Image (cartoon, rainbow, N blue to C red; front, side):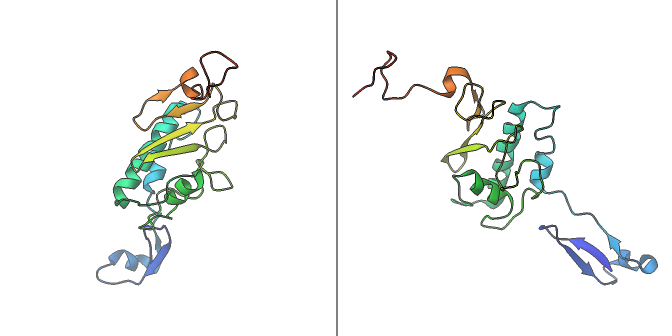
Length: 178
C-alpha cells in the first residue's frame, strides 16, 4: 500500500494498481513525506538569529498576501484579532486551506502569532489587502519606542512616529484640547 498526503497533510492509503506501480515494489508500503505547506516555506527563517526582526514581519505580510491570493473573495477570513489571523493560517478560512503548520515557531501555545521575543503580534486591518503588523520589540511591552511597526505599504515606523501624540493633546505638555 502507498501512503499519500492530501493538502491537509493527513495520510491516505492506496492499493497497488496499474496506475500506481510504486505500491508493488517489494510488497511494502511506501511512505511519502507530506508536502511543505506554503506558509512553512515562506516563514522558514522566521525569528531565527540569522535574520532581522524586520524580515520576520516582511515574511509574515508576504504569507498573508499569498493566503489572500489563494482564497480569493471579499472576505476570505475574519480579520481583526491576532487569533483570527492565526486561525486563517491554520485552515479556518473559506476554503479550509491549511497554510501554516500548527507547530510552527510563529505560534505560541495559545494559538497566537508571536514575534521573536515570544510576544503576541498586533494586527490592524485597514482593508482586505492592507494590514499593519506591530511587534512589541525587545522590551516585550507594546506601544513603547522600541516597537517594530510594519505598515501595509511595506514601510516601517520607528521612534516618535510609532506613538504619535493624541489628537486631544495640545502641543504643550499637560494641556488638553477641549
